[in-house]
Length: 423
Image (cartoon, rainbow, N blue to C red; front, top):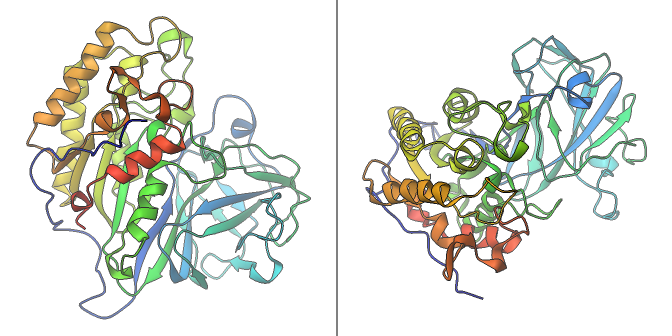
């Protein structure tokens, strides 16, 4: 197997952000830090995410990055078509004595979440909600189990469609149930209405936000294993690093997302398009990036879907990446961009062509030579086969010739120069 490549650092040195959260150093007060987050979209045009939940509970597992003694969660109805009533919400720890059933939680750990002191709350159409903070010590890289009960029909859900994590759905209020036997529907997808977990810490250097597509969203990685490359980057940041110097890593990636097209737009090879692929990348900044708790650095990893799905030109892709960079920097944040990874062999005829490969190479050549970004992660160099650079290295290929497997995701995480993240 070829040696792991290093992600080249191209562009000006990473800058120190001029805006962001109070780190707590001036007042000595605890601060809130983003520990987990997910980009959300409207439910699809058919199926459960369109009809919604009705007298159902949904139990979802999330994997934190950084820990702290208190937590709060964020719910989102941003893409809903009506107000949504949350009848009850709890957070708990998984029952590790029953590892084959991830829906089980330890009874003693179950804590009720409240909203302005109330166990029940209504999310307005298009609104988000923060829970009241609770004392619930969270460790670095810890699994948390959030259970929400919806007593009446929600209508189309606001959700993240490619969680790479089993979700559990059952009838009636199961928020306090330790055993997961009542959760009879168990799809390997979908965080619904849940969009963030914050923890309180003594100090925080802020958060790294990854604005990506399926490469970062984990397609091709093992289900229920947290092997997406942003997860593995968080592992690397936490390992042996003092708490005050450890940023949260917030993965705001959406499988199938494009810079210049809406998720519902069809693509090459008969690809139909779905709501869950999200709005165009530029439209996601104000919803998925800038509101995140303590964001300090933004890593943009978008553009390959514009090539294979939509046949976009290098000029149009570069223009959108430049605009994202300008808007990120205008907020005083550090802006890092990733090169586009190879995908020859993926899909049916027309998905990959020599002309589309030339577009990918042109975008990457621009990014490597540009001085506009604070840094460039050369993911193409990390994942490509040196003997055939339009293809993934076989050892890193999940089998579909576009998405890295667990080993490939680890190679990406290992190749990120930490100084680009201000560390």
